[in-house]
Image 1 (cartoon, rainbow, N blue to C red):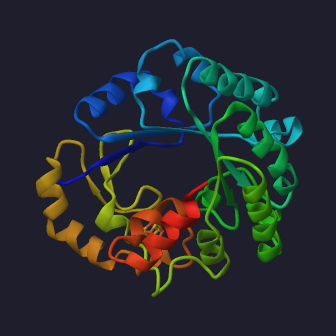
Image 2 (image 1 turned 180 degrees about the horizontal axis):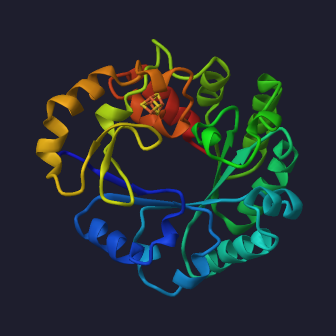
Amino acid sequence: MGCRIVSFTGGEPLMYNGIGRLVRKCVNLRYFTGLVTNGLLFGRFLDEGWPGMLDMLVISFIDDEAAFSTSRGHVNAYRIVKKNIEDMVERGLSPVIQSALTDDTLVHAEKTAAFSQSLGIGIYFSFIVETPRKGYDTVNWDDQKISGIENAISHISTIKDTYKGVHFNPDIERLQVRGGFNKHVPCQAARTVVSLKPDGSVSLPCYVKTVHSISPGTALGPGWKSADAVSVREACGHLGCCRGCMNTCMYAPSLIGKPVLIFRWICNSKP
Ligand code: SF4
């Protein structure tokens, strides 16, 4: 199929006990292999060899106890995740922190950057303007989305200039406030990403919306080339479910064929 990258994301990929076996398999098949986790369960895998095999290990974290534990709905989340990050670094792993900021948590960005710098690891900042999880999340995102986007961009840009290892891409944030994917940056999720669900099915157009599903019993190649799959791929970005979508995870995969935007993305993503 030509895939070169596997990213285990969720939900929460560490809920699956066989995750280590899958990571090893992907690394052995020479995929660039990444994992995105909330970090709560990482302690139980710390001494297994596979975390050190990952090409990219991303952990969601904000360095403020009340804000982080509240956002996770777990009273000890801050203490557990912070310790897991510190333990990872002590064992020679290089996790990258992902801080998705809201109006309420923007104020904690600098402290979080200082924490990542103190450990010598990288940090990605992004803003929550809208989320495809809105339909089934219990969090009221409308109350928390970033207002005053240019001020927020300027604040994080200053932090990026001050601390080491900070990654931030204002293009994605501006795309969000302008209403998400559009004719200049159309979503290409269904053309560039195979979205494999926990039950083994493949969702089209993407992992957040299923218009067509390739069932677990179907070989991926023929399923991917079926008439239904092709028609969803061709309509990707223009489907009813795509209207107003701001799934920022699909931003980079949607830049294929857009060299200027890829160049900007690479430049902006550099710490
Ligand atoms: S625009 Fe959103 S809903 Fe549509 S395919 Fe892309 S990520 Fe999925």
